[in-house]
Length: 214
Image (cartoon, rainbow, N blue to C red; front, side, top):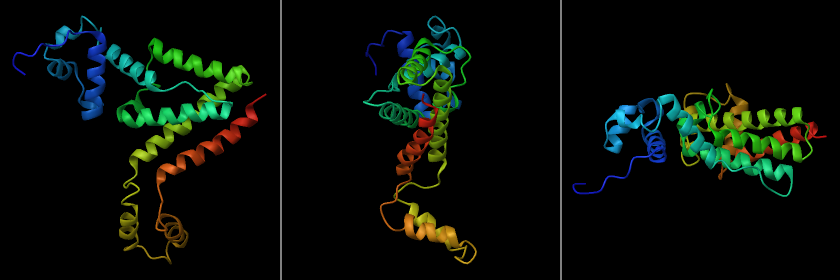
């Protein structure tokens, strides 16, 4: 807007803007030139605040981890459920982050502190140091895998029945009897939402995690 005062360029503003652009346009379209244009500055001005694009990505991942809540609750199960639920919600807010959150060779302090907090929580809950690592890896693998699968589904809860009907227009119940039964008794029965599978699967994972405690 003509006459509007441009916000003072800072590292925090640059990172927040980069995250917003990645959310809106995808990480593949994010460049220092594109970011500079969004901020109304030349790309070279950004390098006074972030050393290079890799440093920017580290900072973006740090911002994501800042939004994932540490485990908390009356029991270790409650704590891990709370953290996993927050983790899933954060990754769904930032779809680009899934491929980056565990890939940074030079993670920021917020990222490292979150990992430290989770390990400390597990150790305090009675897991050995080695078992805490097992639990951390197992729960993260479940959350990341669920978010990836959830994102790739060709339907949501509202149009699942239409997708199912279209699929079975060309495939008979004789060819796929069990799939037909599942869709008829579960998907088409009403109230089906794939998102509900998250809590059920997480509970099964935590049942297995209990074997590692003590």
